[in-house]
Image 1 (cartoon, rainbow, N blue to C red):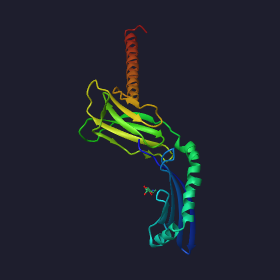
Image 2 (image 1 turned 135 degrees about the vertical axis):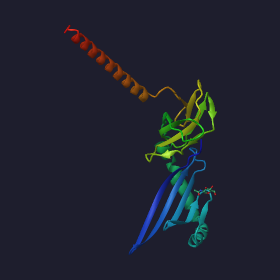
Image 3 (image 1 turned 90 degrees about the vertical axis):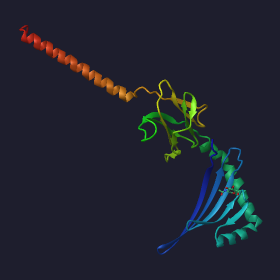
Length: 246
Ligand SMILES: *[C@@H]1O[C@H](CO)[C@@H](O)[C@H](O)[C@H]1NC(C)=O
C-alpha cells in the first residue's frame, strides 16, 4: 500500500490593506508524518507574500532556500546564523515530534472499513456485453486496493477505476468497473484490500436477478393470480345466475 503523508499546519496570517489594494503575508509551518517511528518526519516553514512562497526552511535540507530575490537574500542571511537554524530544528523536536503521539492516536491510527456494493451497470458501447461495478464507500484512510477475480484468478484487462474520491467528511469512496463477456458456470468476484481489514474481502457476483427485479416479478405474478380468481368467480356467478340457480 502506498505511503501516506499526514500534514499538520500552523498558519500565521498578516493582512495589510491600503485602500482597495491589499498585501497578504502568510507563514505556514507544517509537520509531515510518514511513519509512526517518526522516520522521515519533516518540518517545513514557508513564508508567502501575495500567494507566492519566497523562502522555505525544510528540516531535511537543514537550511533555508529562497525563491525570489528577496527570498534568496534572506536565506543567505538566516543560513549564516546558527541560532536561527538551531531554532528551526528545535521546532521539529518541540512541535512536530512532541505532538506525534497525539496526531497518531487522534487521527492517523484510526481506520474504518469500507461498505462494498457490487452491481451490474450498462456497459459503454464496446467490446463486451456486460459490465460490473464494485463500489467501496466510507473508508478511511485513503489507500485501498480493489481488484477483480474470475474463478479466483486476477483479471487485469478491461478494468477501469476512479481515484479514491474524498467525500469531504474524512471518508473516501472508489468505484472499479469490469467489462466482460459472461461465460456459464464462472464466478466473478471483487476483492477489496484495506488496512482496516485483517484479510482481503471477496464479494462474489450473483448473476441471478437482483432483489428489486424479483420483487417486481412477484408483485406482477400476484396481480395475475388475483385477476384470474376474480374472473373465475365472476364467470361462475354469471353461469349460475343465467342457469336460474340464484
Ligand atoms: C524537503 O527536502 C527533501 C530533501 O531534498 C525532499 O526530499 C523533500 O521533498 C522536501 N520536502 C518538501 C515538503 O518539499
